[in-house]
Amino acid sequence: AVEPVYDYLTSFSGILPGDLESNRSTKHLTTLKRTYVKLRYLVDRGCTLVGHGLKKDFAMLNLVVPTAQVRDTAVLYRLSDEAAAKEGLRPRILSLKFLASWLLGTGSRFQNANDPLGHDSIEDARVALSLYVVYRKLQEKGELEKTIL
Picture 1 (cartoon, helix red, strand yellow):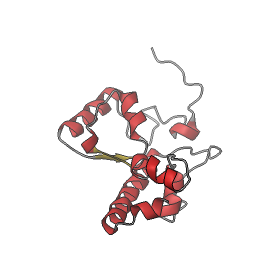
Picture 2 (tube, one colour; picture 1 turned 90 degrees about the vertical axis):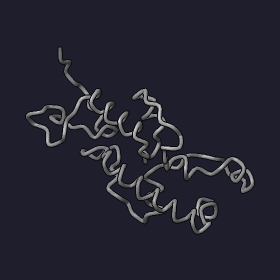
Picture 3 (cartoon, helix red, strand yellow; picture 1 turned 60 degrees about the horizontal axis):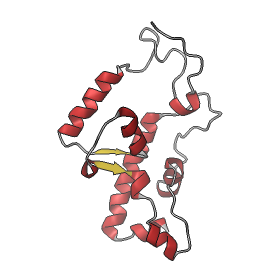
């Protein structure tokens, strides 16, 4: 039995009415099981997963990913407790929107809660990958700590 959807939570999910209907959707639709199987395959093959705030996503999927295969920009750009204390700051996780604006110099296509298009997970993935590239460059130059302070 299919239950009706009363609120798509578009500002968080990016899902609009019609997006989940195979005859109306412009999106590629798949099942949760199929998505899980694909992710499990990628993890088992040793692929590296890049994103922002992945811990909650993995927990929701009940997916265990070895730490060595995860590049989470929420963790990579987090100021260490020691460095924060030394600078008189409190450690915190920086938002993807803030990091994109600050390090990529882009307002990006991040929507706000009032935008009818809502959240765009594909844009989030692209931005997270770009931030990871910047992270690696900063690390190579030895400028990471200076940059995030």
